[in-house]
Image (tube, rainbow, N blue to C red):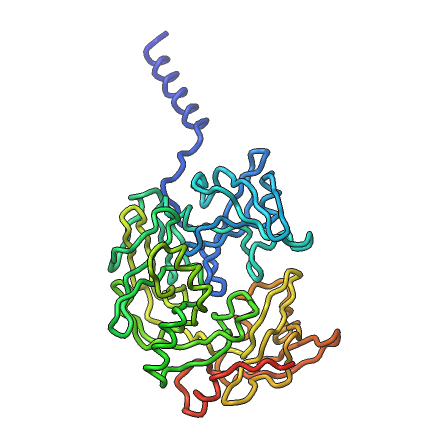
Amino acid sequence: MKPAAILFASISLCILSAQSAPPAEPNSVTVPITLDHNRIVIDVFLPLPDGSTKRVRGWVDNGNPDLEMSRRAATLMGLSVSCDEKACSAPPPREITIGGMKVSLASVKEAKIPLKPVNAATVMAPGMSAEINLPSVVLRQYDVLVSFPDREFSIGHPGTLKFKGVSSKVALNSENGLVQVPSEIEGKKYHLALDVGASISFLSEELFDKVSRTHPDLPQMTGAIGPANMWGLDEEPKWKLMRVNRLHYGPLFLTDVAMADFFKEGMAWFEKRAGIPTAGLLGSNALLNYRVGIDYAHSTVYFDIGSTFRAPDFDVVGLTLRPEDDGRFTILAVADFNGKPSVPEVQANDHLVAVDGIPVPDSTMGQVWSLLEGTPGQERKLTLEHAGKQFTVLAKVQHFLGEGTPEEKEGQGKTKLKN
């Protein structure tokens, strides 16, 4: 064969090999975020038995070490699901895919699946679109960057992400990946967890009450509304809320952070998982202006400020909601404002049907609360259902948990359940 022919054949073979070779898997990826009720939701691709993948929504939940998923997600992946009277579980898949990068689940022992009726098979957590979470036990194997200002989530193998901003060494639980950040409140040092999966921040009941007694002038109220209305738990109407005027969180100096009190039983459970004494957690509500990087390999977190805009967080209609498995929203409580029920026509156990004509069933908590927020004084037309009959009321957006007048502060001190 002539040299020219040999050269041509070699080039052709190289081209064919390049065309047939699968693309290299990326070492890191960046994907868009849907910020839903301060929760980070991204696209996740599940492996199916036939070798293909199925796109579902995933929740970045670094404050939780447990892998959780919906019954439908487990069924799609062909997992063997077993149940008892309280919950279900399944062996986890080997991996999932995010933005073309395979994320290993080898560190997970089992996937937790809620025990739900057949018509709620897609529900992993009420009021969320996500059908699987990314827990701390998985994330700890990688570099992680959450950019709230840019609405982006990045994940990569250790050493592949470039972090910016101020940094702090943290206490990292080597078994489950939970992160505790050295903090200071009222001149005393504590640890507060970093939990970008939480829509609101929490202080232990003891510390909450101490700050409240020391600073009775701080904006305070009772009742989980807005971002504090996390899940619609029975206890949420009784939750106490307060704006902590200042705290040090690692390298950050934060002001006017809305925080809820962490009841004693829940705090004991939380502290046991943390593995060290902790005084609560900082949720996404306090970090919306930052790019938050977690370098798990070096037990270091980074905070890079990307915005100074401060969006109102409690300028809302004063309701506490519970998302139901069937997609409806039940009203648990009505918050008082200025000493009176903020929506006096509404009763506990009514169902919220629509806001300004927009139906709310099958929505997420974030979508519903986006309809209930606004400028104080604005009116929202609520369509409700009571005892099978629908009616409408006009409800005002109020400036809850704000400075206000002394009378307003006093009036925001309670949440009233109407029977």
